[in-house]
Amino acid sequence: MSLSFLFALSALVHAYVGWRLGPALPAGGAWSLTALLALSAVLVPLSLIAFRLHESRAKVWVSWTGLLFMGLFSSLFVLTLGRDVLLTVAHALSWIWPQLAPSAAFNDLSAQTVPPLALLVSLLGFLNARRTAPVVHVDVPITGLPEALHGFTIAQISDIHVGPTIRRGYLQAIVERVNGLQADVVAITGDLVDGSVSELAEHVAPLAALNSKHGTYFVTGNHEYYSGAHAWIDELRRLDVAVLLNEHVVLEREGQALVLAGVADYTAHLFDPAHQSDPAKALHNAPAHAAVKVLLAHQPRSAASAVDAGFDLQLSGHTHGGQFWPWNLFVPLQQPYTAGLHRLKALWIYVSRGTGYWGPPKRFGAPSEITQVRLVPAGS
Image 1 (cartoon, rainbow, N blue to C red):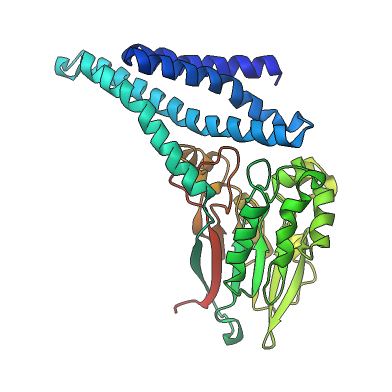
Image 2: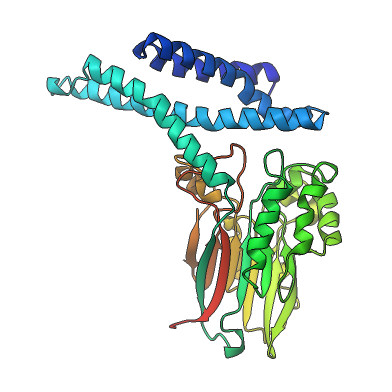
């Protein structure tokens, strides 16, 4: 996509909002909206190309301001579009029921409601996105679970997206909260970063302090491949984070074995054919006596292959739970599951809503989470 097209598209959609709302606003409100839209029309596309800037402070400033405006404009656009749909339907129905024709007062009031409502939604979304993710406790019932593995816990974090607006302090707070869980294992299910190792190594460094009984394990997400996956794999291993690329480890507790496997991202082969995601390969030569087989896979759509491979549980992320309305409505177009615990034949799938956010610092209707997954016997 060329820069000229990007800026032209931004100007067009911003002009649409101004055209539909401006005439119904008081003069002062119309001028304020026009100024805000003009600024947003420039900063939003700039935030998408900020990675091209060489000066780090300029890159962070442009990203922050542009992404804040992107979050606000997304609500302005959706609410304006929703208002237009409502008015169009009302006008159409008024051919049959004239009393449904929108009055001039309703037209003005609905337009005047959109900007403050968009601002409120964006503010709440910002606060939800920037807070440290709360812990969500999930019990997964496993048939035939040995007593030694009752209560085995996996602390899952996912989709943090360390980058222009998520830095060291944000990740440090997540690490401290995870360590407070005293989990048996920590699992990071991809999309940790948005940027190169040279840019972000210092901001990812807190991962070295993660504590659990059996260590920290990581699988790649699609964003690792946008950011230099091989360099990040080396960096994470340097931080004592084990990277599972279509492979597994065997964890034992009181003589009972649990297989923890991981696959590269579902689309990894598009970047490196050697990273073709393969749940069956990840389980190759795993001990037959293992009581539980857990797969870490960034995208939920790995589930069909995980069932065939014989896994009991898959932990995924990628979707962000939609991050903010109405984008959650579109997730099912690409993924079989959006968030939460699901069942596919003999496989349980848990999809995290993510521990950070991507793009605009905004979460609305899809709160972030640190997940504590606990294995329990079926029927308990």
